[in-house]
Length: 185
Length: 193
Image 1 (cartoon, helix red, strand yellow):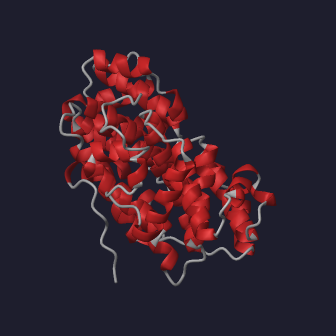
Image 2 (image 1 turned 90 degrees about the horizontal axis):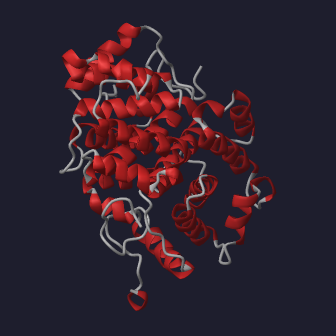
Image 3 (image 1 turned 90 degrees about the vertical axis):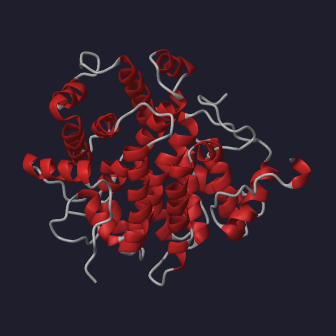
C-alpha cells in the first residue's frame, strides 16, 4: 500500500504525477528531453536510451520502472527487441555494440557511486565511438533513474504484476512519449 | 578534470547545465518547485530553509561537496545560521540538532531514500505523521531526497569542478534566495571573478 493517499489502481510514477502535477511536469519534461531528444551530437537512439533506463532501474530493483522502460525499449527496437532481455540478463554476452556496453558500464558506476566513474571508463567509451553528448546523456539518464526509482519505491506506489500491462505502457511510451496524464478537475 | 568538455569556470552543476540547456530547464524547474514554490503553498508544512536542509543532508550522505556546500549555504541564509553551525550539526547528527521533531522524522525518511526507496518503512512514515507531517510533507521529502540522489550523481559522475572558497557559496546563496534557481549565473562576485 502506498505511504500516502494516491488514486486507486494507478501504477508507479503515474499515480505520483497525478497527485502533484507541478512536480510531475518537470519530471516528465526531463524524461522527454533525455529519452526522446538527447544532446545534439549524441549517437544513441531512443531504444538505447530506454535500455539504459531499464538497466539502471534493474540495479535499483525498481520493478515498475524496469518493466515499463524495458517494454518501451522492446517496442522501439522492434524486430531486434530480444536484445533488451539479453542485455538485462547479461551485458557482456548481449548482442549490442561495444560502445553501448561501455556506456552501460558508466551507467552502472553512476548508480552505485558516481564518484567511481573513472577516466578509464570514460576513455573506453570514447575509444568505442561515444561522443561527448553520449557520455553526458548516459550519466544523466543513470542519475535521473536513481531519482525516479527512489520516488516510485520511496512512496511504495502500486506495481502491476501482469506483463500485458507493461506491454501497453511500452507502446504508449514508444509512440506518445512522456506527457502528463490529464487530471480530472 | 571533468569527464567531458564543459564551459570553463562554471562551478558544479552549472557546467553540465550550460552543456545541455534542454535538460537544464526541467532540472531547474524541478528544484524551484520542490525547494521554493511548494514552501509557499497553504498546505506546506516545510519552509524553504527546512527543504534546503533536507537537500543538504542527502547531498552530504552522498558525499557531494558542491551540492552540500551550496544548499547548506542557502539553508543557513534562510535560517539565520550565520556561522553554518546548524547546518554542520544536521549533517553530522540530525537527532541532536536544533530542529523540530517533525523535521528530524522527515530526515530519517530522507536518509532511507538516499540508500534506496525500499528502505522507507511504514514505521518511519508513522513517526513522521505523529510529529505532524502531512501527505504533502512526506511526498516532498521523498522527492527532494530522490532528486538530490540525481543532482549529486550528475555533478560527481561528470567530475565537475567545485570552488573551495566559502565566500562564493555565501554570495550565491543570497542570489538564490532572491532569484531562485535560474539559468543565469550569480556565482562569481565581480571582485572574485
